[in-house]
Image (cartoon, rainbow, N blue to C red; front, top):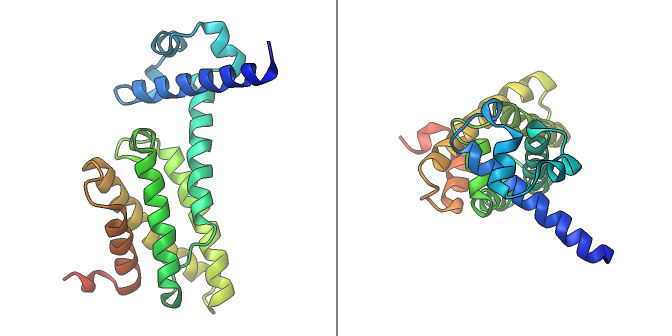
Length: 191
């Protein structure tokens, strides 16, 4: 068998296992899911599962890493400064477009009943990137930057969770504008 054909089979197997776990996660918590259940859903035998993953938590961890990598790619140029408003908007819209494109997995992992650890990881990634950029561009000290960032990011997570929970009916550009407006002008922009 050629390595190209083998690579395609491995990719397919991993894809089916990930999709199966996400589908089961829509109904059950990870600690209630068995390898047998995942394999039955994926129509793959247990030995094949164990060829690629240690257990269901390892599989979930791989899915989380893919989501983090996708979001991280969009955060590389993230700014919260008014003179970079268009750049901030485009970056946020890119993140929300990523969530829409990967809505099934993001709904499970980032929604109201999502994986808290993943939400915290994403929060930490955002914090590290934005604090570095704020400190380069402003005279904010580290402690103040962290407070402001926690306020902005936690509020943003709440908006994103509500957006996901409501079926992502509002377009991603509208959610990006809302977050940027509240972040830069506060609630008074809407009241």
